[in-house]
Amino acid sequence: MLHLSDCLGRAVLCAGLAVASLGFGPALAEDAVLLASTVPGYVPGMVVSSADRLSVPEGASATLLFQSGETLRLRGPFEGALGQQQPAAAATGGAAVLADIFRMHGVDAAVIGGTRSTGPAQPGPALDDVQVDPERSGTYCVEPSTSVWIMRPAGETGRYALRRKGSSRALAWPSGAQRIEWPGDVPIDDGSQFEIASGGAARTTVTFRSLPPAAAGGPGRIATGLVLGCHDQFDDELRRFSRSVAGPELWITTGRGRRPVYHPGEAIEVTVMASMDGYLYCVGTTEDGSARPIFPAGAVDGAQLRGSAPLSIPGRRQPNGLTASTATQQIRCWLADRDITPELPHALLGSPGARLPDQLASDLDGLFGRIGGTRIEADQLTVKTE
Image 1 (tube, rainbow, N blue to C red):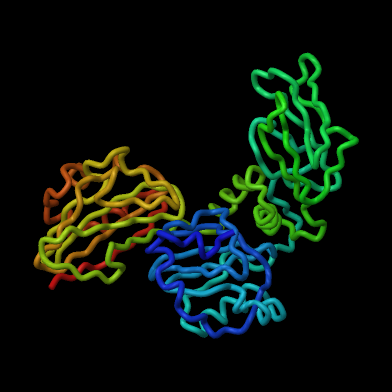
Image 2 (image 1 turned 90 degrees about the vertical axis):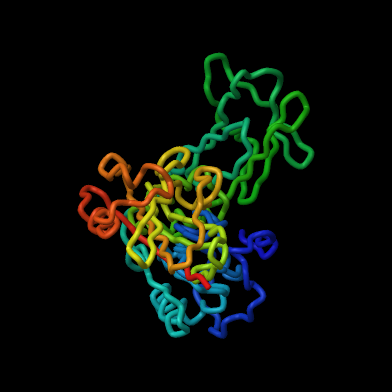
């Protein structure tokens, strides 16, 4: 889970955690998982308990999936804990009421993809057949009907055993068998933890969690599985669900925030975040109408940008950065869900810092708007000089 100690060294993410709590009353008392984010340091699948404080900078967003199956998007600036709002929401309508409470206090909040999951759909992996990898520690969610198997280790050598609380149970795979069933005389309970040992030394640790019978279906089941720690089983389903309900988002900031002021000649440190994988194109413009490419011109690995992975300019992939001019500047970026590089003018992708033709500079929105077969998100910020 996300704790205050996790914020050490995360200036952008956790600045202001000492700010006094927002005065909402308590609300939806359940843990949630992060579905999508444009906040550096917040990654999908992260568990957010009702007591954890969230720090969402201005313009950035964090979308949460609750175990009820509801999703809530918060757009910064926001500082606070979900638990401060929850009882009223739980009693009177869940995430929709929670979003209303946030909005009453000036926070941009919205329910995404509908309300509680009540239909028969059950996204998430089937738990009737769970296969334990003896060479990798992990947490596995199980149900009463689950059959648990232990896979044969690659290059199996020596003797293997299950160990727990001082007791040991030998493991052996018959010739040609790729897996064996979990020993019937070794019971599995919620929270059971076992070592798989070889040659007398522990190799991995295996933990089991029971998926509650009352767990919500649909996306709520995914959230519950992740809250229990079963990432290997539920991470892929979380990504699929995220793509279906939470569209891609883009966020730009600088080393001086979203409203930066620089002196002429100072280097401008830019950070770009996307909530999902995509292809990024950025341009710097000035109030006189001139424009210069920022990214991917001269960048390592082209335009591709991984979701929830901050891109620094200048940085490893793009060593060429911006310098504050004497005029007001804008940093403008577009994120496409497919590679549109072949459909863009070469000038937009060529030498970093080379001035774009005036006609191209004046029609950037039209250029990206005319490209079909893709979803394009945009963001921009203004850099002032003094």
